[in-house]
Amino acid sequence: MGIERKRRRARHRFMWAALSSALIVVGAVWSGAAHAGDDVAVTGRAGYLSEWEVTGKAHATTAGQQTEFAGPLVMKHIGLCTTNGPVEKSGEIRFRRTGFLTSRIEGQLSFADEKCTFTAREGTTYDGIMQCPGTRGVPFSLKVE
Image (cartoon, rainbow, N blue to C red; front, side, top):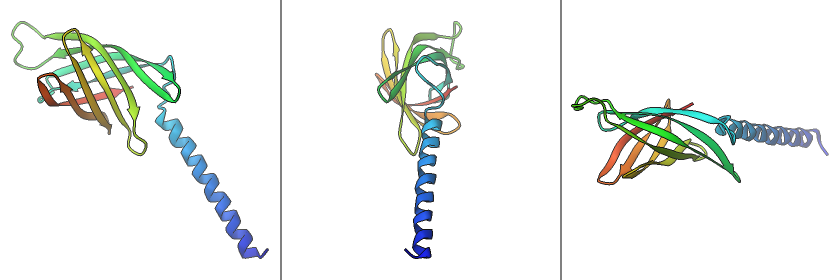
């Protein structure tokens, strides 16, 4: 075997080792250090004028390869139109991370009288759209820590 061929094979082995290492690192980052049993804080805003403040805590559970987060949530109306003080809705949030190259979350907010779904793409926060009965395309932004 010639020396050039040996160099080419060594380069290929190095490239495969680097790619494998990169995929392991991406997997570790993607998991976000959230393992089954971990809690994460959820904060954010919702509404066309960001008039709803979102706060909660979600607990991570893992089934197979999928980690889902769920926990109590409070949405508080902080807009100017409140007459007798802020309106609060207590409920539950459920979400999971999706996507491979671009991190996304999708989930559901459940309240006594309604269920809303949302999808959001990661940036500084997860920004996306919430769909509720009677309202469509409500801006939604979450920070998950």
